[in-house]
Amino acid sequence: SQALFRLGLEESQVPSLALVFVSTQYSISPLGSTSSTDSLSAIVPKLRSFIPGLKTVVGCTCPGAVATTMVSGPADPAIPIQRNSQHKVEEVENDRVVSLTLFYAPEIEFRTFSITEDDMSQIDLDSSPEKWASLVVGNQANTSEFAGAYRASAMIMFADPTFKRDGTLTNLLTGLDFAYPSAIKLGGLASASGPGNGHMFCTLRR
Image (cartoon, rainbow, N blue to C red; front, side, top):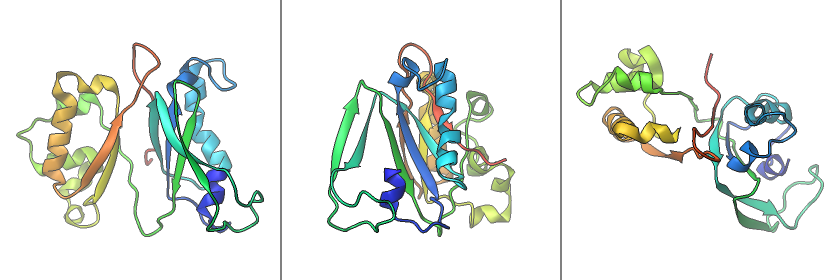
């Protein structure tokens, strides 16, 4: 509710993107669920129940998170946000925390994608830019539209820690730099509470 309040949208406006980071502590102490998987899998449905119409959600589990909380200013969401409202920046580690950042940018098209190790086994560093781009946009990489509307200006990516083995992650970033040389790329590795995989959130187009 704080994130929505501070974004200051009209009732008819829906955030374009939600970035969510969830503490790995929830794998140990799930929120109101009988299993950690159920708890983490409930993140996107819960967000959409709070924000009807929200389409794009990405994020991952992490050992800690940085977020801002409101320490003064209007308490009633019906009151417009005041410019002098103060916020406190907090870093929480090794404790239960969820960090949510909402973006409203209706002029920008956000496209989600996922790449698996099986996908990477069918491509190598000698592949063409279109082949690498097909990992992101599918068969559209081979159409005339690829040169225009489907050229990404920035990418936010999260990877499972196991994706680092055998240089898979390095090869992926190299290939995406080949396909999208002008696109800014940022992101990180999902964390796990112990041995095993991290957890990532990505609402894919159907």
